[in-house]
Image 1 (tube, rainbow, N blue to C red):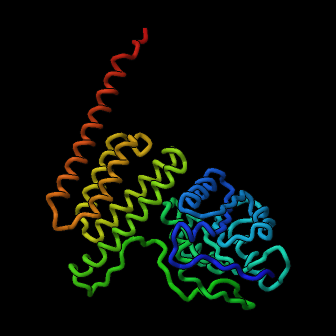
Image 2 (spheres, rainbow, N blue to C red; image 1 turned 90 degrees about the horizontal axis):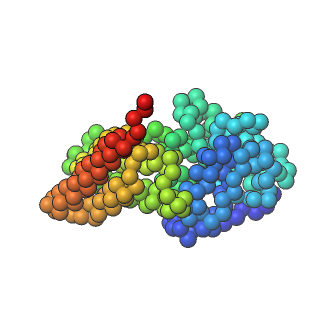
Length: 319
């Protein structure tokens, strides 16, 4: 078995990620490409994609990845069997799997308690729930490198130590019931704004890397804004909440994320970033930015209605 390769430092930067090699395994070509694009846009240096788990297993020795992202439901060999096969190499040896301890991140829509327990017993390190966002994927890289789990090899279980407990379905800030509201909000608001900034930066890099917004990216953008609004509500960040409400109202008004004007998305992104950099006491400046944003949305919505009305009048009447 080959010696373990040194991974980048835990203070991850794009330069650190550039040294990483990641293997993406997903039988759905569109999803595999989207994950790969997110990782490359985030700074990962080498990304290999396999749409067949058996091919992925056969390629491990040649690729020798630092992290594996794998789908759960795949033909021929599903994600659980794929993970188990990698882990069992620690017991049976051989040259097919150079590093049985490699971090495995499962990308799945199955988050029931039984599904999670089965994946953990198979030796999965972390999870990303579908539908995902760019920051959700990149944060798992941060997690497996910043907080690596000891690797356990026994007759009954092979895989990462499961004693660190995580809640999969919670994306908001941690709050203790005993914390004064003002204190928890003040401390958590700054952390939440950092999370929002990372999410938006990752999304914008992905949009640039793919050369614009296609249907899947518009849907992902909608999810990111919904998450942003949720986080703002949790910490009573009224300015960010009002900004996301503006964009979500616009999306609803035009009939969904696929019908959005890219310019509207960009001005909302810019407004959120600007608002997060303004002192919370400067309410006048925040109100001015948000009002200008709302006027832009109203103008664009009015333009859209005029264009639709003009199109209807120009349509030939069937006889």
